[in-house]
Image (cartoon, rainbow, N blue to C red; front, side, top):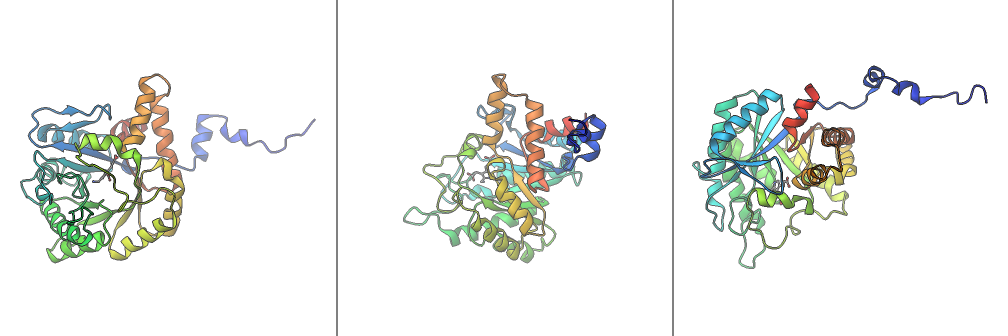
Length: 326
Ligand code: PBG
């Protein structure tokens, strides 16, 4: 059949140069944010078995790893603290000598403005019951009592020098209360990356080991139902109204449709968090020889960017940055 087919999309896929020329989606190291864990009292970094390749840092190893991440060109670092002791109200989070606040100071002293230093604004790493807030007498999470604690947390993290705070507890009003507290304390330049859309996801499993969470039960009264998308648009609208400078969708890969809708709906930068379970399942398959790690990592990051994320929190940030530069 001469002259058929007349349209041949394969022409534009023929060589690497041609494919590069027509590529619609790019991932840059500067789009990637590395989540890092630091544990109080550790002398040496300690492996996290459900997150192969990720560690709980000591203060010293955190500084070193942060400098390496900057050298690799990552766009940001998100810090999580693991305290030695926890209590009902999570008071170690507010303590200026608490591990997260100390770590923020360490990392800012190490890297300065060479990358964006962010911290998780939540109570779950600091509470003995593992919930993201303060409990009421009936055992439920007390929204408004938690907001008061978040205001103090926000000021403590800003005082420690964080450039961006990530309110992640899914309490109503958490962004507004953080913004007001920061402004009242003179931290008008500290930005908020709101975990605006956060599902009650089984994919956070390995994170619980990373922060040694004591959580019994679940977070379904404050995190979102996986089947819903309309409320995600409502959550981002509320957070932006309350002062969010950037919004996040979490997890990433199982929620790409949500990410796309959010990215279309808002005019602030949108982040996606490729969470611990997304990382762990790929690493497990790689360990079995079933997947090609480098290709899968870049494909997932490309997909998340294609769906609409400006930036991606990923435990592969440094590896991916190196792959992208190679
Ligand atoms: C809450 C927080 C969690 C994660 C990031 N911030 C845990 C949760 O909401 O249950 C999970 C991140 C991951 O799984 O990689 N402080």
